Picture (cartoon, helix red, strand yellow):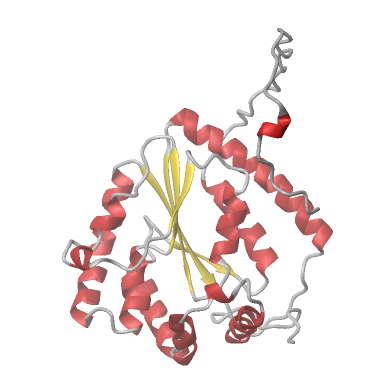
Length: 275
């Protein structure tokens, strides 16, 4: 098993070494940040904000782990995750952005896209699921599409999770060995290893067209999952000014002690007490 301590920082960096955060420090900081996320949630609801956060990056870069830590303390009616399946035959005939528009937030909502419209210049392009003409049209259209989103009042934040080839291989090996994680590893993921350079080239060209002043890419160094989670959540909190609207503690009312005879317990079917 490979050590995580001295991995190169990412596919965009130059082999700089660094240490992992201690678990105790990580847990305490994550708990603190999750309290702040609840405050942000209440602010989004009160102010009627519309927030879209895109999570993109290589397979096994840790996007899902960050999304999970963000959503853990939040109300799913306010913060929801969108992770679309492959387009249907009907959706393939639609305007490319059409199926994503249906998932954009209303006032008081935050939507986290676990992969987004950037599938086209990434996975679809590298795997041959679209034509180069379609990619060129995407690069022509996406700046205007995102400008329209922003003009409509939506706060758009884009994250790219960067992971080194050695760390990605380590995580793939973990998924192969662990039966509870194998569902995360698809034939597409395995093919992505074979096409590492193609994905790098596609990502670099995508950035050249879509890393814009109005909607820049924020790169998250994701070689150490815990660092990536804390750094991304901290940055997300910094992107939206908010105030503390934490509700005051409520006082539970006393139980109604009026007379009521419940049915015999023996008439109910209980789950066997194995533990």
